[in-house]
Length: 405
Image (tube, one colour):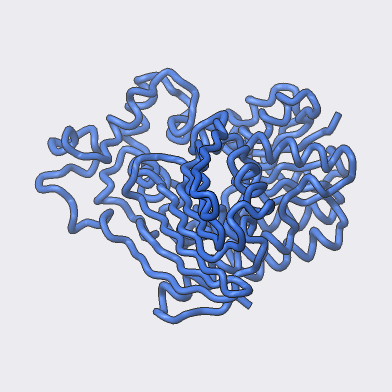
């Protein structure tokens, strides 16, 4: 039985811990979070209001799940690595290149099992696609088109009203949301990226796009019924259910509690009257070792769907939508549809199409057997995908092509 400590018991920490406990292979023995309501969700664990209280003690568990806010990753990661804990670290690793290098160095020094939560590598869909590519079904990969459809309501929730709306309070959009995707493209090709160019910006969620006579809060707004980003339409139908994204608003998920949160908290604000500055659309062009290229688009203005990808090879191509893969064979002219049937939808609420569960299973296997092979990305692999994000952001801001080395 693997024993776990949870540092940061919000949505992600709670999800990973519940997956781990649900396997029957792990139990949570310690939880550190400043909110008592979150600590109380682990009644059998020793509670700590600050992770430093836990870190001041001798090692209390085999492994630690670190799922604090992005800017609060580096200190606990360094300390728990020093204490000899195996570490499951939510992405992004850190919010500066220096932080990420320090975390990788600490993980390598400690010799511990270390995994960044690049959950897209662990979905049944990805495993099937990777197996097809590695088997040479479409020959050599020449180019890839990849779309991350963030979803109009998810953008409004997390990146306009929510915790990831500002670069100075969290980090820039590409690192916060899409280091998943950059890492995934490296995983598919098996190659490092050498240079990138990028374009994008904050197009829509700006004060000048505010409807005439719009109020500062959706509860008071005469324009609300026609607004796609209405907080009342997004959250009130979920009242009474302890699920994300509602749990980000309030611990009281009754209708009264939700209305109070919309009246007083950040999630009830007009999306055109927030203090957000992260982009709502961005494209990244990548060149890999050997000349393979990829074009990645992240956009807010979609339904919340699985990622959509086209992989173009010398002997065929594959189109994928997260549910199924369509393989085109240039030799036979035949088309094969491969169903992957993910166990959940693309959102955090749906477990990222089985990725959350797959990651946790792999981590527990590595911790219990001391065999790292189930972990699909090394610390240096994760560092590379983060460096890709910084290179792309520099390109977006400067208009120049940027090398990743």
